[in-house]
Amino acid sequence: MSSVSIDPTQPVNTNAIISFVAGILGWTLLPLIGTVVAICYGRAALTEIRASHGAMQGEKLARIGLWLGWAHVAVLALVLIAAPIMTRPITVQLPGTAALQTFSHAVNSPGAQA
Image (cartoon, one colour):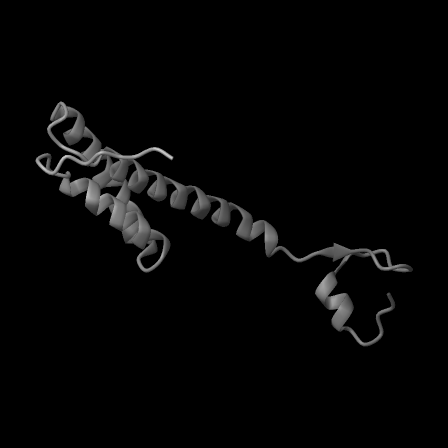
């Protein structure tokens, strides 16, 4: 297990903290807003931390917030792609019929045979 040394004289970047908290909120209470804030503030925090040349801490917080934000975007994209595919009606050809009928119609019609 690695230990992380925290220097109390180095300030933690505020944008990194905001990104981390927003990344968690993006998965829980504020899905859209939290995700956007996590990504934007995470990028800003990493830029500021790199520009400080070691005078600021919080790179791990910023990276975690950034990853949480982008992971949420990826999951949302997969859901938006998969939802129309998963909700399409299933079509089956019943024995003795030439036309395709939707599965829900075949199950719900009283004279249908399996």
